[in-house]
Image (tube, rainbow, N blue to C red; front, side, top):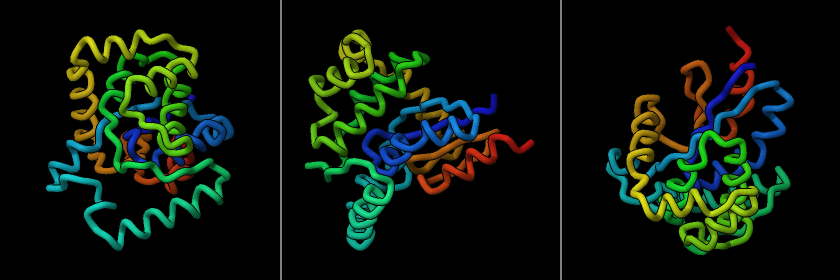
Length: 196
């Protein structure tokens, strides 16, 4: 079966849109999806940004929030602007590294995205991460490992792999070594999965 890697940061609203739509689109296209949570912050810092570009550039930020309202309405995706943006996604991502390669990883990721962008809960807290694990049919084992052990080595490996792939934003899709950036590129990435 053809395969696509879906790279995302839990703090990215556009990655949330992709997480809500990628499952049915991939099934229809006959493409397997590998969910690859990582942290975009270190990559932004290497570009000289200490915050989201949507906070650094006011016009871009205004467009961003308006566009998200339009896109969530168009896609029928539940949406509430988070109380804080970007929220800290380190704990959620460390926890995810302890779930891979479990087939319940997508369900955990979707629950986490919904907590942050549809339910206005804080995904940086252990309580919310725990609730998302339970929603995916998992126990708190991955969260406990993320809290007790640094988990940083797995996270750093994922960030380094994202760098090697030249990922600079989220969501990103990698198919056959080729990078597609942005939620609106999902269809093209799925098509590419079947091209030799």
